[in-house]
Length: 221
Image (cartoon, rainbow, N blue to C red; front, side, top):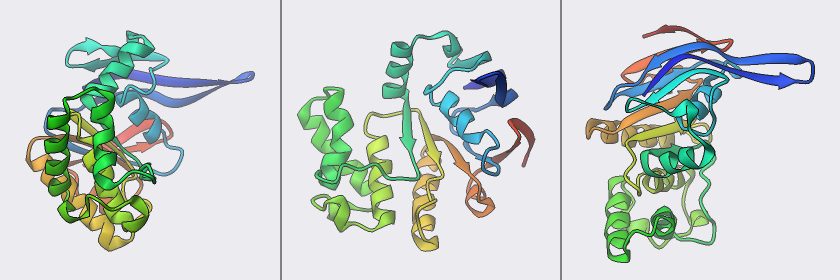
């Protein structure tokens, strides 16, 4: 994916508020990138555009060579469903579904054959180290375990990019470290990961750290 001179401007009455100001960013297949900066710097807006949740006011967003900034909302929804997995600070698990059922839900929506759904969900639960917790409901799991179920769910449709917005924000240090170890293992297997964070320690797990301030990229490490 590539962002070329991307601007996002919100119109607030008589005023224009630029959330992104001329962002240029290339995300290569298999990378683990952290976008880091303080609250209000534009990093979540950037993630929304990378994740096809929003389009820029001007500039180009290229995914596999296609300018998706010109796509309609239904076309963007198809891309999100097939190519992008999302992880949020809040786990967003359905409380009345077990861990396995939460993982299976996106596959049911995409009408994947049931025999494949069962096989994939069990493999993913094992991938995140929770093979013994499949029949547990979210309330019976720790915060770190819930986030790992959310990771498994995000992978159920085989996305090529995983977007994580403050994935350890609601976790203690130990649980956060376990979640980041899962990300490292997934990245070592070739999955592209883009992570939003304000925490330098969490950003340190990534191969590349993109620093933002006031809607601009101010540097990389």
